[in-house]
Length: 191
Image 1 (cartoon, rainbow, N blue to C red):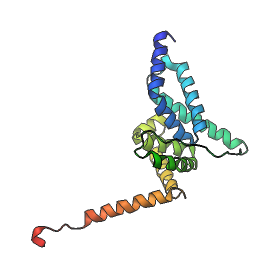
Image 2: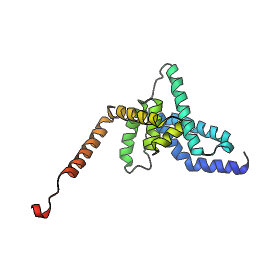
Image 3: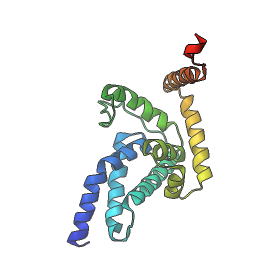
Image 4: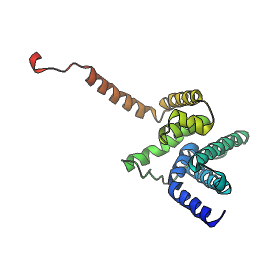
C-alpha cells in the first residue's frame, strides 16, 4: 500500500471501528472474542485494501465467516471452562445506560444460544438495521433464508428464560395500545 492508501485505511478504521466492534460483539456474544474477530477482520481488510470496493460490506462478510469458522472449530473441541464476566460496559448510544448495563449480559447470553447463522442474521437485521435484502446480499444467501433464520431466532429468543419477561412486557404494552385504538371514541353528540 502506498501512503495515500494507508491514510485511507486508517481513516476507515478510525471512523468505522466502534461500529465494527459492536457488530463483532453481538455476533460472538463475547467481548473478548469480539476483539479478536475485529482485529482479524481489520488485518484481512488491510491485506486486500486496494482491491476492496465496499470496506463495510467486506468487514461484515469477513466477520460472519470468522464467527462461523470459530463455531465449527469449537464444535470439534471439548468444552472449555468459562469464567464469569467482570465489569460490563453499556452501549454509549443507549438512552438508558444503566438499563443497558443490566440487559447486556442477558442479551449476550441469549444471542449465544442461537446458531451462528441465526445470530448473524439477528445482529445485521435488527441491531445493525439492514433490510432483509441487504443481509441476504452480505451473507450470500437468499432472502427466504434470511427470513426463516430471523423467524426461528426471534422465536427462540422469545422463549429464552432471561428474555421472556422483556417480551411479555412488550406484548402487554402492544396489547394496551391496540385496545385503545380499537375502542370507539365518544363524540360530543354521543354524550
